[in-house]
Length: 343
Image 1: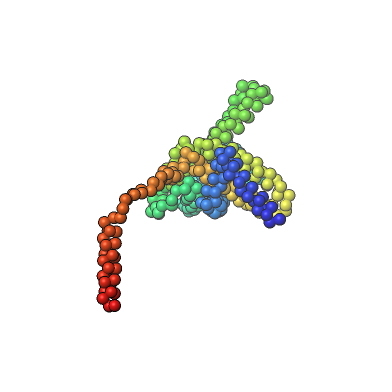
Image 2: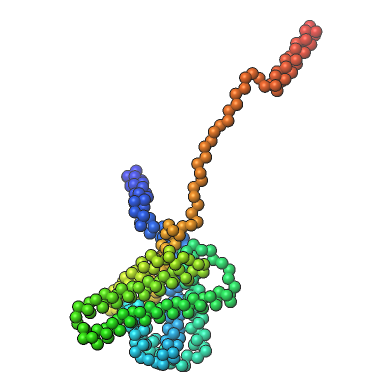
């Protein structure tokens, strides 16, 4: 019995290397999984999740407070951006986001210095952990950076990410709201153009998500990364993010019947969704970093060495051997002569 199990394990061990050699995509995924685990991907994802939940409310409040001041509380623009955010979160979390947006826009001028300081503190802490996690998944060494320099860079990265997200939400809003309005004005609503508009909206949403993920994967690590090498990872992340939205939607729909969901459901849903997105983002980053074009640190095997023994053949004894033999013969002769005299 033990022999059969050992043979089964041996065949299994031999099967995986064969599959990895035969299917390069499978080998790439397994290498990415090894890198993700070796670089503490789960721990970093947990840290990102914690800081995401901790900072999402103050960041959104300050962001929409600023938007409310800049655009003069233009409800049409705010509604379009809100629709873009609604498409980025599962339906079960829309109520939380909408309440935050409404509260932030109504108190646009009353946030004060304390509210802005809290939002900046939470946002910089979240960005710092996110950048450290992405840096680790790229295999870069963590460098000691002065606290002031690090804080300013993280703040600039936070502003850049916020700008990228606003552009993404605006693109999604334009694809849906503006397109529908144009069809309505042209009297083409309900025609086959509506289907084409929906397809174009989906493609535009994927493109917007791809641009955000491309910026995150290639620009947030603390050392420079080639943007070209992150394009495939950003495309996969854009499609995978949509799938994660569907998974989170089914999960929230499944637990919504639980009486405890009314109290803890939205918070738990936000935690689950944030953790799924964090794990997925870090895994895609590890997948991008383990691509062959990014494996510059691989050490090539040494050149084969040929060992050639050097044999010298000599005829007759060497001078040292001859002197030794003569000395030994002299000692033997002297010993025999002394022996004869003793007799």
